[in-house]
Amino acid sequence: MDLEELEEKEEIEMCEAEKRWLEVKSKEWEAEGIKKGIEQGSEKKELEMYQTMVDKGFSISSIASIFSVSEESIERLLMKA
Image 1 (cartoon, one colour):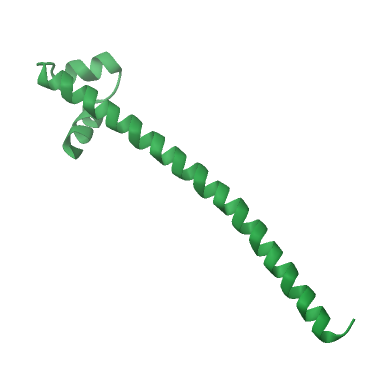
Image 2 (image 1 turned 120 degrees about the vertical axis):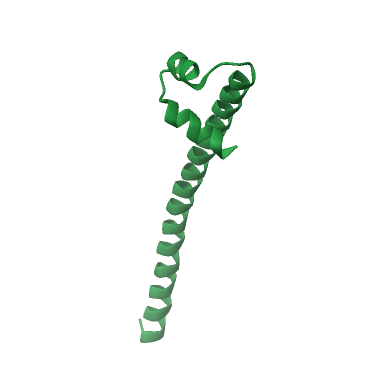
């Protein structure tokens, strides 16, 4: 095997390694995106629920007590709206 063939073989191996790395990272990024989307959807639903309760006259402290969360977390979420 001459030098040119070795270089070509090495280049192919590097491309294959890069492809495998990208496949792994792609799956990680996809999983991360799904997780983030679920978290955002959950947060949006919480916000809608808290806002509805506030609109119906529930106090922040009552909502916090019902859902066993801090008043600060509810206020922070409502401030994002």
